[in-house]
Amino acid sequence: MEREQSCSALGGQSHPNHHQTLILKSIFFLDGYGEVLLTSNSDGLFWESVDSPETDGSDCLGIKLAPEAPAEVNFSDVYGVEFDNFGVIRKSKLAVAPSCILCDEYEMYRFKVYSFQRSKSQPAQWVLTTFTFGHKDQQTCQMWVNQIDASLVLQDERPKNLLVFVNPRSGKGIGSRTWEAVVPIFLRAKINTKVIVTERANHAFDVMASTSNKDLKMYDGIVAVGGDGFFNEILNGFLLSRHLAHYPPTPSDIIDCRQAEGNYPNEAINAIVNGSEDQAPLLSSSKSGGLGLSTSRNSTDHDSEFPAFHTWFRFGIIPAGSTDAIVMCSTGCRDPITSTLQIVLGKRVHLDIAQVVRWKKTPTSKFDPCVRYAASFAGYGFYGDVITESEKLRWMGPRRYDYAGTRVFLRHSSYEAEIAYVDTKSEDTNAKGKRVLCRSNCSICNTRPHLQHSHTGSSSRQDETRWLKSKGRFLSIGAAVISCRNEKAPDGLVADAHLSDGFLHLILIRDCHHALYLWHLTQLARKGGNPMDFKFVEHHKTTAFTFTSFGDQSVWNLDGELFEAHQLSAQVFRGLITLFASGPEV
Image 1: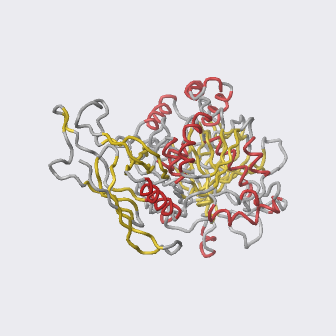
Image 2: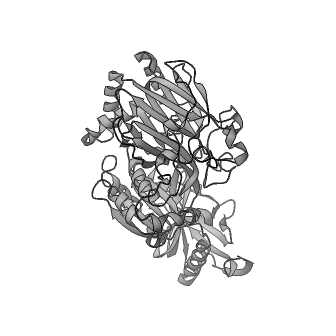
Image 3: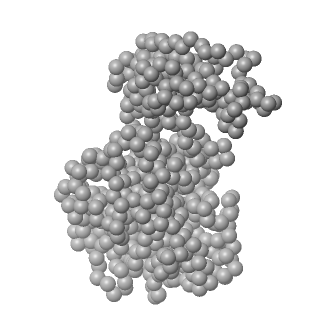
């Protein structure tokens, strides 16, 4: 029996940035559920069944058809709404017995509300959900669509215009297909996108470096459809021409110290840096020849604008690469739908960025500073050799990393190097010796102000800075900006690394027996493993380090990109950029 449909509108509290918000109430048919009393207020949509308890749910041929649906959806979780013309509304979810007389179907006008639910098997993964409401009156449906649209406009953190770069060769060549799969979400969210499909290496870098700030201000952010290396290309194109920052000290700037030999304990070094007395320990040295600022092309236009960009401009990554570590660490899963939803809903999380400065490419090279940025990881030795080997095998797709890794492991090459790093006091680590994992709304990442260099600190503490030095033969040297979680290392290289705490995790793997190194690698591959619990492994939480190689050289791996260096320095900038992400939930 058809009920009489009703609709009422009540005046509600007004929003400070909008006209008075109406509270609407109407009786609708919710597809797959039944008749409901639908209510809309400033927070979202709420509904309750209008069926009597005896008829709430039904059975067909002995099969119970109890409806299962949430009773509310917040506007903060809704990314779109649209009128869906005239069509069928089903009272039951049972689609296998459409001829059953109890599986009621009605034809009426409809509108759809697009949202998401968290996966039951993997809470970090967001699953698309559509709520379809039906009503016999077209104007009633249109009124609700207009009201919900007006409420979504109030979600002012959401982007309206995005510049999208698609790498068609990412991972297994799935970049274009990945983008095509998520385009409907952007359309339903009414987000304008300018899409650039890259045609060659460094195409995205060149576009970002040559685009003026005036043109970039047309967008609320940039989205990369690809892997970590592709995002690194975009990031460097953006920062190299805009980020005004002093270089870290060169290795030779750290003076008054004896060289540590072999496996002797690390030695403390006074934090004496060549240069003017009013410089903080990480500012450029006098040996930089006046090149203490990392400027690049179009510096006049770009440099003064970066702080303004930082307040609203965001970066998004839709995973289509081989490892996608940045997405894994910032969303908790490697899923294009989840990443896209967090972009269109305007989620926000800050991300530390490492600035890496190469002083000399080879021992015989001239002193010539070259700046690069890394968002996840910088690695030398094993990590660099794997990337070098895998570059020859791109035709294999992501499998090339397993093959290259096996070959490099069997080769078991070690390299002589000297590393100096800033010694951080226990209170600077926030964790105070305890393992605190980075999660959504992380208390550690939210404790300090952003857009500052984490090491410079207050002037009262600059004279307390000291450096430690480690020298010997190393199988690998790694500096993790984030935990670097991926499918091969479920906890990442450093399980308790954070997205935005202002620290690098320096991991030094000294030369050791083949079997011991294999044991270390197997611990990395285990969830809950202890890869740092070995005598040949050094783990230092720091804000900056310097590096010098001796003898045979490996190559550095910066977010999957090759970077050859004999001497380099690195420092971390806390919360330098902002991602469209909510942080890992599990």
